[in-house]
Structures are given as structure tokens and as C-alpha cells.
Length: 99
Ligand SMILES: [Zn+2]
Image (cartoon, rainbow, N blue to C red; front, top):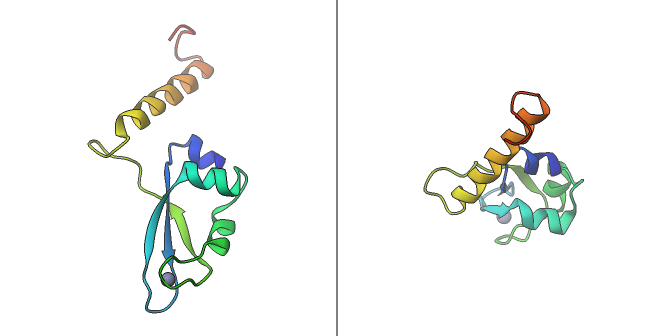
């Protein structure tokens, strides 16, 4: 999950696959990283997750939508993304070290 965090992803969508249930939830990626560790895969999360509605184990898990303008936490996310891109440009030699 670590590389998803580094790529700007901040939430995981979890969809119950039990027939007739249809429950879906969005879980903050920071919470999942604390619970399952940074090395866990989407497959591992999908196998371990339990539906809060029907209690069935196993689901579909995928990266959530990136925050959009006006969404809660958007400004913090944007600042982190700018910092990440500046770090990349510095490493690529396209930006002076002092930024
Ligand atoms: Zn369910």
C-alpha cells in the first residue's frame, strides 16, 4: 500500500461482493496502513475485510478517488502533492536545490 500513499492516494474503496448486499465504504488509507502494514496488498485487504452490514468476509478493494477541489483535506493533499512533485523535479535535475 506504501506506493499508493506515495502516489497521492488517500482512501481505499471497499465493496462487499455478497449477493444482494451491495454495501460499500471508503476507508482512509492512513488507517489501513496502521492496521495492516505498509507492505499489504489490495488482495490481502480484500481477503481480510469483513462487511459491516452482512458480516461476510472478503470484498473488492481498489484505490479511492483522489481528493478534488472543495473536498475535505484537499488543501493538505495538494500541498503534499506539490512537495512530492518538487522532490521529483529536484532529483531529476529540473529544479534548483533551493526550490
Ligand atoms: Zn455485505
